[in-house]
Image (cartoon, rainbow, N blue to C red; front, top):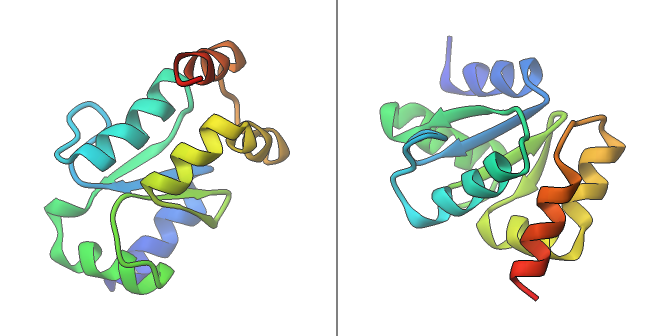
Length: 119
């Protein structure tokens, strides 16, 4: 299976996928840590893919999305964005709307606490 096929299968098989450096329990860069932290705090179930474990996937996800940086978040097969975009969407409430529109469970109170803490 090629890296492209592996990436596509992971995205197709999971409602929410985060391609990141490290894992959801042990991120290995600040940007990955921020996005994983938001998802973890909001109680979102997601698949985490450690791009450091496979160079083919590390480069492959950049080619797949035509996006140059890691982390990358996918919801219901659609590329959402990287750290800055996810941070903005979290603070504006757009991430909540995206999860609701796609039937992804999350803790609304936790999302609100993130916004309050960053107001």
